[in-house]
Amino acid sequence: MRNKLFGNSIEPDCAYCDHCVSDGTNRLCMKNSSIENGKCRRFKYNPLLRKPFKPPTLPKFDPDDFRL
Image 1 (cartoon, rainbow, N blue to C red):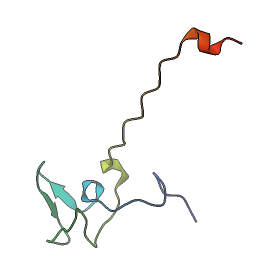
Image 2: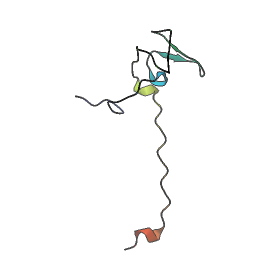
Image 3: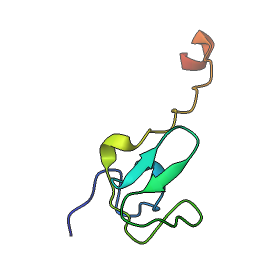
Image 4: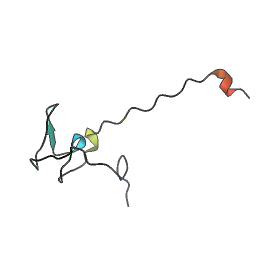
């Protein structure tokens, strides 16, 4: 099985659906008029719409941490 971009287990969400039209506050589906819990049955993943999470900040290290 081929791995998809961002993994094989992507939760459906209208924020990155190919059929979703958004004006900033409201989301409408071009294929299905009803959207329940942020998703519908016609979900089609579009990786270009996905906004990745920010990476966690790294802790500050002291030069003494690297001495042997």
